[in-house]
Amino acid sequence: MADEILEKAANNVVASGFNDNLGAGVTTMAESSGLLNAEQANEFIDYMWDATTLAKEGRRVIMRSNTVDLDKIAVGERIIRKATEATDTASNAAVTFTKISLTTEKIRLDWEVSTEAKEDSIEGAGTATHIARLFASQAGNDIEDLAINGNIATGGAGLNIIDGFVTRCTPGNGAHLLDGGDDAVARATFDRALKALPRKYKANRSALRFYAGSGVVQDYLTSLTATVSGEVSVESLATDVLRGTISGPQGAGGARYPLAFGVPVVEVPLFDEGEHTVEAPVTDYRGAVELTVPSNRIWGIKRDIEFYDEFKPRKDSTEYTMYMRFGVQVENWDAYVRIENVRVKAA
Image (cartoon, rainbow, N blue to C red; front, side, top):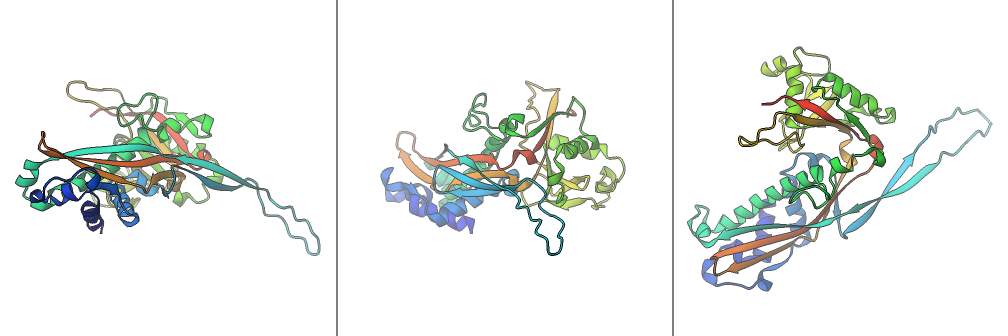
């Protein structure tokens, strides 16, 4: 279905470029630009989401305006009382109504397809549509990276648009931020996170999730030398004894998630653990472990998605531009624990 919608969007919105009708002449930008309709926009958003790991588990809000206020309802005290027959001992509990604001920022995605690429590709007329799908997938990957690692003040190109979850996770916002103390990841790391989470959020432990980067997850699995109740060892994985794991969603970092104290540990490849290359190796890797309810992370995206294309005669290529608005928020920071500076073994 996603492919069909993208093809419709290509035909209706950016007809000249996506149709690859090379004999029909060149259209102007005004003739091949505009908004996706509601159905196309929703399917395009779904297609981007398919390329994500963390966003799939979060709460997605499709917005009609640049900013929306989301209602929060909280009951902050015990509300049960002893019932005494024929006696009115009722005491109404206070319900707190608050709002959180979800604001989006405008982002742009650019790509270019040369005429020769269209003519020579084995996909023929479907080349530009195929490339559009690839860029939609990359857009989903970039959006998740921005949501996690975005920092307006210090982020590089593509990460200085909004403040992501890591930047927003501060004690000032109410989050429980701990330091790993340079320790390597172990069961004690997850133990600390669980103990830092207020007990009222542990009543439904099956709804909780640990989140960690690839290196942290690998080191955690390596540290388990024997099967422990509620967890899984490397030996168990090697023999395909998968008691102690749960299946992950398609497209997630791992096909199955290990458990720590009965809570799934979700691998998030875009969690920063230090980048390295042959020219600039990094030996001091630091990761993080987060604990929260998946729906606590809110992902806002405005449905008004614009596509533009323009043929450049001097370059003999077609340039494509997409505009959309995106933002993130956390509903309840009190239910959010993050342990930083967890040491990760070098490769």
